[in-house]
Image (spheres, rainbow, N blue to C red):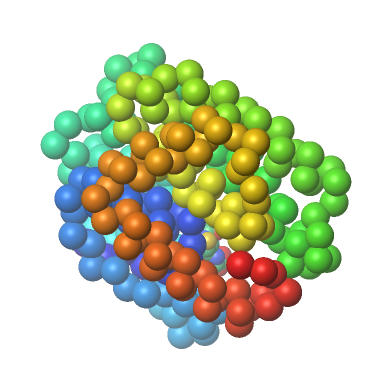
Length: 215
Ligand SMILES: N[C@@H](CCC(=O)N[C@@H](CS)C(=O)NCC(=O)O)C(=O)O
């Protein structure tokens, strides 16, 4: 199974963590989102030319949430990451849709604004704060974000919270998020190595492509 990916990309990080949890060995093909030949190769598979893109025996899927669900449904030994129980799954889905439509969306909007204008507007910062206030509540309701065990919701929310490093965002005000992050990362024995790899690659990317950002 091939994954077109770059570890600096949060959606790619999420899929890589899902694969780790499922014990799937991915053939990772590094794809440079600024490289013409990489974009051309990716566009042949995925007209949206986004990473991550997965190719499983000729079957091509993109959109990280769709890839993650596919991997769990096809290769999971059980359904724990994406429970079949409708009520539990509905909470996982709520967190995932909250992530794509609110949390990650507002983190990206703040990063883009900071890159373009040096600082995000008060409105964008306020939207991000509201999303984080909600996340603080969500991760405090159960042992994990959507259930009493790790699910896809934890992995995707963790990816978003980790992306706050691009804003050097201080999580001091969010003790539940900090406690939950420690619990989720402890589910991955090599998480600190994985995080170090993200930091090193992101630092390199930022110094080349967004030198005005501090990281
Ligand atoms: N909603 C998509 C977002 C994917 C996405 O936009 N990836 C970025 C990198 S983080 C990308 O491929 N950008 C290059 C492009 O759009 O051409 C997902 O979750 O997979």
